[in-house]
Structure formats: C-alpha cells, structure tokens
Length: 170
Image (cartoon, rainbow, N blue to C red; front, side, top):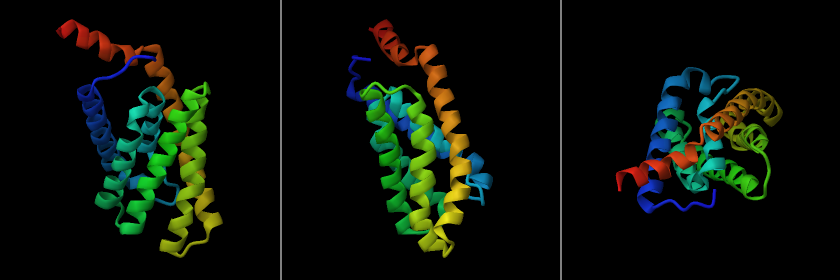
C-alpha cells in the first residue's frame, strides 16, 4: 500500500464513491431513516481503509445525503459531515496504525451509533438512549457489511488493480 495515486485517480475514485454512496442511500432510504436506521451506505466508509484519501469525500457524501434525503436541516447536514469525517478518518488511521479490518466494523458501529443520536435527540425531541439503542442495531449491520466489503476487496487486490490498469494504458 505504499503506492501513490495520481490526482486524477484520486478524483475519479472519490467521485465514484460519492455517487455510489448517494445511490445506495437513495435505494435504501425506506429503512435508512426508520426506527432502526440501517444505513448500508455507511458500510462504504470502510473503503477509507483501502483508500485513505476518501475521508473528505465520504464527509461530502454524507452531507449531500442528509440535504437531499434527510430533511432535518442544516444541523443534521453539518453534523453528518463531521460524523462522516470522523468515522472514515478513524478507519484510515486504524489502517495506518496496523489495525486489522475489524476497525471498520467498530468505527461504523460505534461512532455513528453513539454520535448521531447527540444531535438527533435534540432535533427529534427523543431521548438519547432510545435513539442510540436503535442506531447501534442498524450501524452494527452496516459495520459488519463494511468489514466484509474490505476483506473481499483486499482478496481481489482491488488497490493494485488501479495501478495495473493505468500501466496497461501507457
């Protein structure tokens, strides 16, 4: 993983990931905003484990999702951006410090599961503990899916595919 991506590669991968996040949110919004918020799109934060430059793009994807589909206003959008940065950043740092891909499941479960209810309890006038319990259930599912995604992509050696494809074109 000591390979360096070109600006074009980073921009392309980032744009695809933001678009993928929004498409997954659009397709799953019926249960992504329910009592048990199973936001499968947050499983994509795990890609920051393989591509650490995706930290900011996932924050952008989260804010775009909250603005387009969430309907809870600027507080939700700004806090969602921060949560996207925090979660994907924790995953990228976990990889840097040699933690296994289990960090994806832990970060995706605990950070949004315990962090999002802080502002949602204020916005929705629902007690923090009730929101945290329901979000932790949904985020646990997303965390496991994210970890499995990272494992599958590692086995497929997806990180090096970008370099091989680029070399073959030159």
